[in-house]
Length: 263
Ligand SMILES: [Fe+2]
Image 1 (cartoon, protein in one colour):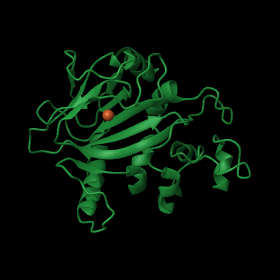
Image 2 (image 1 turned 180 degrees about the vertical axis):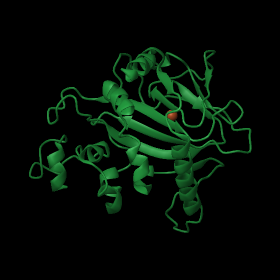
Image 3 (image 1 turned 45 degrees about the vertical axis):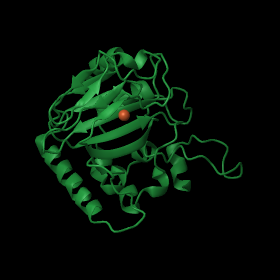
């Protein structure tokens, strides 16, 4: 099985790279969408819109912008890898072979500033199982000059917060179209972008169903995108893990696809 070697690499080193995951056509399509949404954001006059305070470019909440961004996750390789690490085997309401992990946060980013070494799980812990992973789709080449990611191999299993003076920091470069995946416990950061060019990437955080999403996606999703989603995609967006208000509404945060009808 194709996913096996990537799963093994993530278990061993904390990260992997799938070369040529996106076709050239798909890269062009996605980068056009990202640039378009970035332009729309740049012209916004809404006073509550959170403007960027530095040179980094971000398009927030891709799941609200275009169905194309959600569709990327209906891919067997991604599903097999995510399921292997993030699935709850005792989910109960769905068969164990069905995906039950969810989307936590999903942005497009082209950063300029250096990003210090950190972990994304908020707390370090040891073991084969993690509850959070990053999926990074490179839309531009990612090089040492334009601020590629940096990682400390095997640090996901250190059980420690990161040491920013580590001597084991390695560059993680890649080509446009590559997919980088890491266990969110991995010590990671990014170099400064010294070039004048963008380094766009789609950055998705996936978690086990019981972790709180960074955005309230079930409340925020536009109707026109929701109507295109399959039941599996609705679960992925968090619709099967909305906490009930009280015991009259429900007594379980987990739900089957059929419960989507009630939402
Ligand atoms: Fe991070």
